[in-house]
Image 1 (spheres, helix red, strand yellow):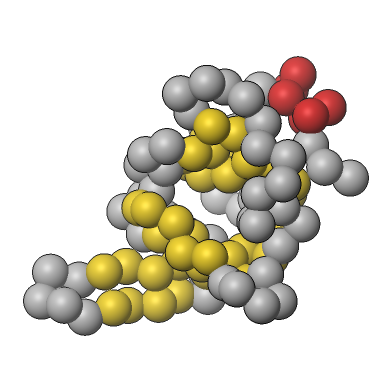
Image 2 (cartoon, rainbow, N blue to C red):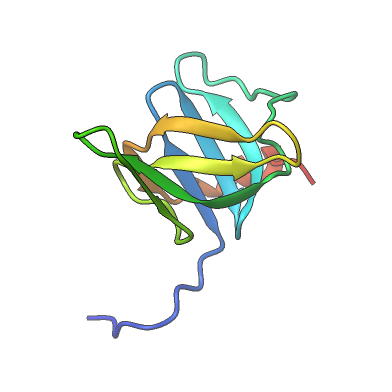
Length: 105
């Protein structure tokens, strides 16, 4: 059993209904359409910073977090102009190693 400590993995994949957001540390380095499997090269999120998560509450309120977004929260991505809020995250995964070569520099 591993002891609990600092997370060393720097790549995460945030899976939403239609899209995968591939993130290195806090930067979006790849966006992939889930249906086609194609990489979306000109996506607004690319090279932008994931600032945290947003949860839309049942009574109409909103809860924001500066922490890494969790399942059920939407990604809040700051683009330096038009910011982006995704649909809720369905799961958070580690990318398969072969996908790393598709990431933006």
